[in-house]
Amino acid sequence: MIPLILGLLLAAPFSEITHSVRIDHDAGPVHADYRMRVDVRHEQLGVAGPGGRASTLRCRWQADLLVDRQAGHAAGTLRRALRQEGVIAGSRPGWCTANRAVIAKDVASATKDMRGAVEALARQDAEALRAELNHIGPSNS
Image (cartoon, rainbow, N blue to C red; front, side):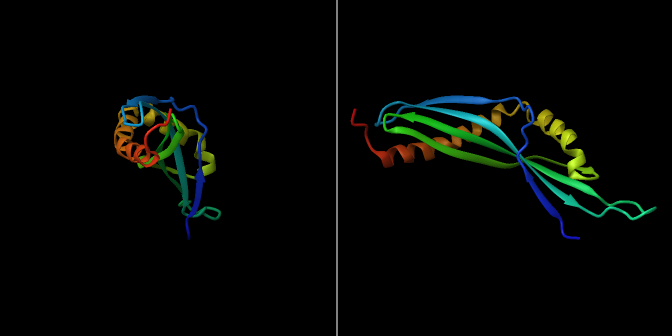
């Protein structure tokens, strides 16, 4: 009874959250834009019961918050993907494929107000962005 992992990126209509910051650096001002995505992973557990027997099928799922950063700089665009795993998780009886729509609704409802999490990831990224800028060096413009 080995679980089958179904990794699916849902294209459900999540409320899109964006966040922008300006970082002052020796290389010049940098404008960073952060855009949220949600990655949902499904894991099929259990077995379908043969005639007259109860099924033990369950779909366990977990949603991860992904935030894509694009920072405009004189030398180009600095991109980075940030991930916070397990922002929400749940389980539904039955097949994952049959529960996809209701799981998408659960995730959309639970992630509609994730602005604080996006802003927290952006704050954590500030140090990495400064390090990238330090590596590039001062602007020659």
